[in-house]
Image 1 (cartoon, rainbow, N blue to C red):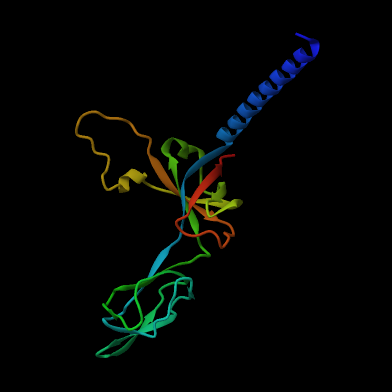
Image 2: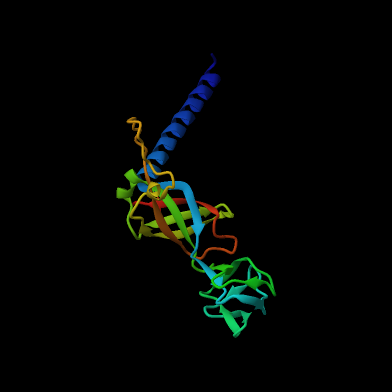
Length: 212
Protein backbone atom coordinates (compact mmCIF):
# COMPACT_ATOMS: atom_id res chain seq x y z
CA UNK A 1 0.00 0.00 0.00
CA UNK A 2 1.46 3.30 -1.04
CA UNK A 3 1.92 6.18 1.33
CA UNK A 4 -0.80 8.35 -0.25
CA UNK A 5 -3.47 5.68 0.11
CA UNK A 6 -2.47 5.03 3.71
CA UNK A 7 -2.81 8.72 4.54
CA UNK A 8 -6.25 8.79 2.86
CA UNK A 9 -7.44 5.77 4.87
CA UNK A 10 -6.19 7.35 8.08
CA UNK A 11 -7.97 10.62 7.28
CA UNK A 12 -11.23 8.81 6.51
CA UNK A 13 -10.93 6.80 9.72
CA UNK A 14 -10.34 9.97 11.72
CA UNK A 15 -13.37 11.64 10.12
CA UNK A 16 -15.56 8.63 10.97
CA UNK A 17 -14.32 8.60 14.57
CA UNK A 18 -14.96 12.33 14.96
CA UNK A 19 -18.43 11.93 13.47
CA UNK A 20 -19.27 9.11 15.90
CA UNK A 21 -17.91 11.06 18.87
CA UNK A 22 -19.70 14.22 17.77
CA UNK A 23 -22.95 12.36 17.23
CA UNK A 24 -22.69 10.72 20.64
CA UNK A 25 -21.95 14.05 22.33
CA UNK A 26 -24.92 15.67 20.56
CA UNK A 27 -27.24 12.83 21.56
CA UNK A 28 -26.04 13.03 25.18
CA UNK A 29 -26.54 16.80 25.27
CA UNK A 30 -30.01 16.58 23.76
CA UNK A 31 -31.15 13.71 26.00
CA UNK A 32 -29.92 15.34 29.21
CA UNK A 33 -31.13 18.87 28.50
CA UNK A 34 -34.40 18.36 26.63
CA UNK A 35 -37.48 16.16 26.59
CA UNK A 36 -38.97 15.65 23.15
CA UNK A 37 -42.21 14.22 21.84
CA UNK A 38 -44.14 14.27 18.59
CA UNK A 39 -47.29 13.14 20.39
CA UNK A 40 -48.68 16.66 20.47
CA UNK A 41 -51.45 18.70 18.88
CA UNK A 42 -52.55 22.31 18.55
CA UNK A 43 -55.60 22.98 20.71
CA UNK A 44 -57.93 25.83 21.52
CA UNK A 45 -60.98 26.38 23.69
CA UNK A 46 -64.07 25.43 21.68
CA UNK A 47 -67.23 27.46 22.26
CA UNK A 48 -70.71 26.99 20.83
CA UNK A 49 -73.34 29.37 19.55
CA UNK A 50 -76.72 27.89 20.43
CA UNK A 51 -80.36 28.60 19.70
CA UNK A 52 -82.05 30.31 22.67
CA UNK A 53 -85.45 28.91 21.72
CA UNK A 54 -87.23 26.72 19.19
CA UNK A 55 -88.35 28.41 15.98
CA UNK A 56 -87.23 29.62 12.57
CA UNK A 57 -83.67 30.93 12.23
CA UNK A 58 -83.45 34.30 10.49
CA UNK A 59 -80.76 36.90 9.77
CA UNK A 60 -78.17 34.10 9.79
CA UNK A 61 -75.14 34.81 7.63
CA UNK A 62 -72.20 33.49 9.68
CA UNK A 63 -69.56 31.67 7.63
CA UNK A 64 -66.53 29.67 8.64
CA UNK A 65 -63.64 32.10 9.11
CA UNK A 66 -65.82 34.95 10.37
CA UNK A 67 -64.64 36.63 13.59
CA UNK A 68 -67.10 37.35 16.39
CA UNK A 69 -66.89 39.16 19.72
CA UNK A 70 -68.49 38.09 22.98
CA UNK A 71 -72.26 38.70 22.95
CA UNK A 72 -72.33 39.62 19.24
CA UNK A 73 -75.88 39.38 17.89
CA UNK A 74 -75.50 36.93 15.00
CA UNK A 75 -79.10 35.92 14.19
CA UNK A 76 -82.69 35.74 15.40
CA UNK A 77 -85.06 32.90 16.16
CA UNK A 78 -88.67 33.63 15.27
CA UNK A 79 -90.99 32.07 17.86
CA UNK A 80 -94.72 32.30 18.58
CA UNK A 81 -93.85 34.75 21.34
CA UNK A 82 -91.68 36.96 19.13
CA UNK A 83 -88.06 37.09 17.99
CA UNK A 84 -85.22 36.01 20.26
CA UNK A 85 -81.66 37.05 19.64
CA UNK A 86 -78.83 34.58 19.00
CA UNK A 87 -75.54 35.72 20.58
CA UNK A 88 -71.98 34.47 20.47
CA UNK A 89 -70.78 33.18 23.83
CA UNK A 90 -67.10 34.12 23.47
CA UNK A 91 -64.71 35.97 21.14
CA UNK A 92 -63.21 33.86 18.39
CA UNK A 93 -63.24 32.62 14.82
CA UNK A 94 -66.08 30.53 13.46
CA UNK A 95 -64.61 27.09 12.69
CA UNK A 96 -67.86 25.23 11.98
CA UNK A 97 -71.42 26.20 11.02
CA UNK A 98 -74.18 23.64 11.30
CA UNK A 99 -77.35 25.40 10.14
CA UNK A 100 -78.77 27.42 7.26
CA UNK A 101 -80.89 30.56 6.99
CA UNK A 102 -84.64 29.94 7.55
CA UNK A 103 -83.97 26.52 9.09
CA UNK A 104 -86.16 25.34 11.96
CA UNK A 105 -84.03 24.94 15.09
CA UNK A 106 -84.58 23.59 18.58
CA UNK A 107 -83.81 25.32 21.87
CA UNK A 108 -80.22 24.58 22.86
CA UNK A 109 -79.26 23.35 19.38
CA UNK A 110 -75.67 24.10 18.34
CA UNK A 111 -75.66 26.53 15.42
CA UNK A 112 -71.91 27.15 15.14
CA UNK A 113 -68.63 26.60 16.95
CA UNK A 114 -65.84 29.11 17.55
CA UNK A 115 -62.21 29.04 18.70
CA UNK A 116 -60.10 32.03 19.71
CA UNK A 117 -57.17 31.80 17.27
CA UNK A 118 -55.26 34.35 19.37
CA UNK A 119 -55.18 31.95 22.32
CA UNK A 120 -54.03 28.61 20.91
CA UNK A 121 -51.92 26.14 22.86
CA UNK A 122 -50.26 22.75 22.52
CA UNK A 123 -51.33 19.61 24.34
CA UNK A 124 -48.48 17.08 24.50
CA UNK A 125 -48.25 13.68 26.16
CA UNK A 126 -45.12 13.12 28.27
CA UNK A 127 -43.97 9.75 29.59
CA UNK A 128 -44.51 9.40 33.34
CA UNK A 129 -40.85 8.66 34.10
CA UNK A 130 -39.81 11.99 32.54
CA UNK A 131 -42.18 14.22 34.50
CA UNK A 132 -39.65 14.67 37.30
CA UNK A 133 -37.44 16.59 34.88
CA UNK A 134 -39.96 19.27 33.90
CA UNK A 135 -41.84 22.03 35.68
CA UNK A 136 -44.15 24.94 34.95
CA UNK A 137 -42.32 27.80 33.27
CA UNK A 138 -39.90 25.63 31.26
CA UNK A 139 -39.19 27.00 27.79
CA UNK A 140 -40.30 24.93 24.81
CA UNK A 141 -39.42 24.83 21.12
CA UNK A 142 -42.42 23.92 18.95
CA UNK A 143 -42.61 22.75 15.34
CA UNK A 144 -46.08 22.48 13.82
CA UNK A 145 -46.77 20.41 10.71
CA UNK A 146 -48.82 23.19 9.14
CA UNK A 147 -45.85 25.59 9.33
CA UNK A 148 -42.83 23.25 9.49
CA UNK A 149 -40.20 25.86 8.60
CA UNK A 150 -40.85 27.88 11.75
CA UNK A 151 -39.74 27.08 15.29
CA UNK A 152 -42.23 28.70 17.68
CA UNK A 153 -41.37 29.64 21.23
CA UNK A 154 -43.54 28.26 23.99
CA UNK A 155 -43.83 27.92 27.76
CA UNK A 156 -44.93 24.93 29.79
CA UNK A 157 -48.09 26.19 31.49
CA UNK A 158 -49.63 23.14 33.13
CA UNK A 159 -48.87 19.50 33.94
CA UNK A 160 -51.87 17.19 34.06
CA UNK A 161 -53.11 15.49 37.21
CA UNK A 162 -53.90 12.10 35.64
CA UNK A 163 -52.53 9.90 32.87
CA UNK A 164 -54.27 9.65 29.52
CA UNK A 165 -55.26 6.06 30.30
CA UNK A 166 -57.58 7.27 33.08
CA UNK A 167 -59.83 8.76 30.40
CA UNK A 168 -59.58 5.78 28.05
CA UNK A 169 -62.90 4.18 27.15
CA UNK A 170 -61.45 0.68 27.42
CA UNK A 171 -59.44 1.28 30.58
CA UNK A 172 -56.49 -0.86 31.68
CA UNK A 173 -58.25 -3.66 33.51
CA UNK A 174 -56.71 -7.11 33.10
CA UNK A 175 -58.53 -10.11 34.53
CA UNK A 176 -56.27 -12.80 33.06
CA UNK A 177 -53.62 -12.45 35.75
CA UNK A 178 -50.95 -11.70 33.14
CA UNK A 179 -49.79 -8.15 33.69
CA UNK A 180 -47.57 -6.23 31.31
CA UNK A 181 -46.33 -2.92 32.60
CA UNK A 182 -46.91 -0.10 30.13
CA UNK A 183 -45.33 3.32 30.50
CA UNK A 184 -48.13 5.82 31.04
CA UNK A 185 -48.29 9.33 29.62
CA UNK A 186 -49.46 12.56 31.20
CA UNK A 187 -50.82 15.49 29.16
CA UNK A 188 -49.16 18.88 29.52
CA UNK A 189 -50.30 22.25 28.21
CA UNK A 190 -47.86 24.55 26.41
CA UNK A 191 -48.57 28.12 25.33
CA UNK A 192 -47.45 29.34 21.88
CA UNK A 193 -45.88 32.74 21.39
CA UNK A 194 -47.15 34.54 18.27
CA UNK A 195 -48.52 31.61 16.23
CA UNK A 196 -48.74 32.28 12.51
CA UNK A 197 -51.99 32.17 10.55
CA UNK A 198 -50.87 28.77 9.22
CA UNK A 199 -51.29 27.26 12.70
CA UNK A 200 -54.74 25.72 13.11
CA UNK A 201 -56.40 23.74 15.91
CA UNK A 202 -55.92 19.99 15.56
CA UNK A 203 -52.61 20.19 13.69
CA UNK A 204 -49.84 17.79 14.69
CA UNK A 205 -46.82 19.22 16.48
CA UNK A 206 -43.42 18.30 17.89
CA UNK A 207 -42.17 19.83 21.13
CA UNK A 208 -38.77 20.06 22.78
CA UNK A 209 -38.96 21.03 26.46
CA UNK A 210 -35.82 22.50 28.00
CA UNK A 211 -34.90 20.90 31.34
CA UNK A 212 -31.90 23.13 31.99
